[in-house]
Length: 489
Image (tube, rainbow, N blue to C red; front, side, top):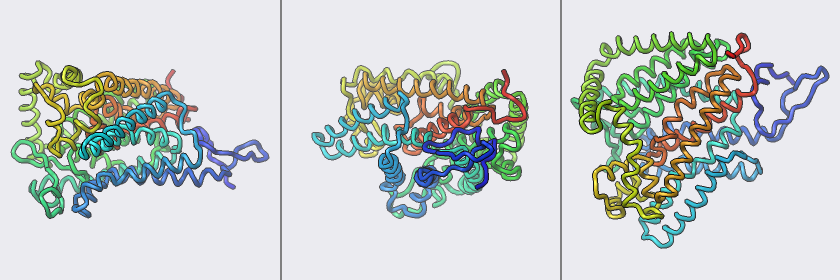
């Protein structure tokens, strides 16, 4: 058997690995029946990940008549992963966060069972739907952390960046097509099979790419941005994409951001870049210099090329930013979008007075409840702030779980973010590899206050990338991978 490369040994082996020693004392390739099981689970994880990206395309263009059932297309694969892990008897994690997440799921399942048994039919469905949004994907994050090797993470990064090139081509077609075209709304024959296309000033389309809403494209392009920054700041030998592909992927990401019409995408991307700039200084001087060059090139390209290549989208976005900023300043005080973020951070407190101690039930404040036309029958709002709070994840937690349990779930998310931050920074400092830090910078926004229980795509992105972040931390924290330059002391 071929011996393992020394750089590979720097990564922590996957669970269950058993190595055989050769005569000279080095380690040979793993001889392990567990590896077949591991690879099967990893393939299923990849299926879930790529379904997350292409689920919308299937619902819009391939099987529009099955759009609603296909919302749950990833769930059977997630359940299959859990069954394979349990049948193999693998201990996924001893983390307190994992145990707390399971405890939340058990309590939530009990509440769902009660609502399904004693509530009317629609309430029973909503409670099951709500449980799925809250708890189904939490264990998947820990399975990903347990099973994915560094080579698996690298393959996922490579494929995502390659997809960014093709996504940008689709996005350009969508933004130049009418809002009511099949390219944007889908090929459904009935009204309820078509998807709503958001527009900005002047009716300029906010493209969704392969997703059913522009929120999905925002999640995709910002995740790809974090991966692209990782590749640009890493030494050449650690890049998993050759230079032509990396340049094309970076250009594709820039195109998607330029025509997205999303202020959230711009703020999210800016947060990632700012965090990466600060973090790179503590990891490696070489990385910080590369990142500075990358930022200058990207920002300059965006400022110069976006108005030339996409004049309508750029003008519409600037006007939308100005109009929204004025409205937000009038409503929330100086600071524009930042003032709005500050206001929404504490908006969940507005629903305390109207929420019973046990909440209104899982799913009661969800988009599904609103689309079914029963949310206002289940929850009586007295003020606009209460209605606005129901559109945020933290407000939804309080309404659906009750003040006590809802605040506990909010605290769970906050502690998760802080714990990952500490571990990601430590892993980046020890290894010199930027991947853990960049993945955390991406997912922290989602996990802290993003709509992980309010939007199916963001739910998937949130917990999948929590798992990818933990996997990157585990695979890099055992020693330096920048062998030509030790991490800064």
